[in-house]
Image (cartoon, rainbow, N blue to C red; front, top):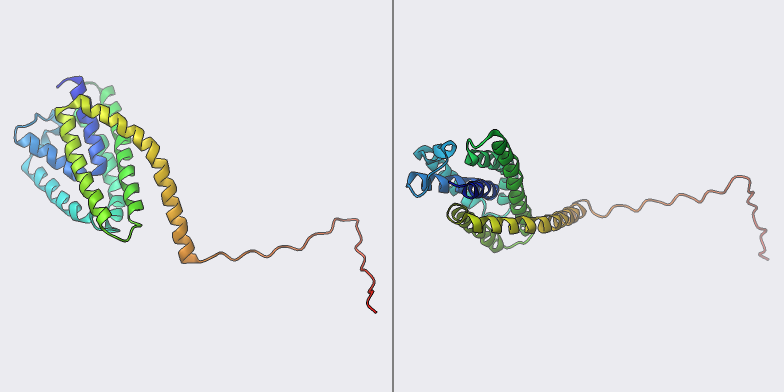
Length: 223
């Protein structure tokens, strides 16, 4: 495996893990076990039948959880503590024993890329959940599944094309994440306003008279 193929695999695993870790593990394990791909030595454990079964089972659980409005956001919030570290570890493992510096670099970049794809997925899903109908959630979730499968296959079989698309994804994330964040803040304010009601207007303090000035009452001119 050349350097371009290695980089594409490492970054592809990190990117896909931020979106759907269990699908990433299952696809990689099945490809390795079926002989369609030679896994790096540190990732050969993924082709063990027990690992494939566990990853496949958790993917089935996530498949349904990810398509239930509200449940998907909770699932994403919990799995942020799993997907991002896993993205870093998988990227470093894909690099293999090239050098300790390369492995640490892959660990850092893989974690950052996994955090980016995770944040984009979780933030988008939280915004979409404000819609009362479930169809947008289903379409978005199915699209994410197709994106992960297609992205992994592209990283493995067409690494140059994948790296170009990955660069475009990073540029899109830089543009989209601040907008998603502002949308989430606006939603949080609306919810807080609906729950807490309007805040009472504070009473104005009486105007203070500067020291040294005497205020005289005007004479009553009424007759």
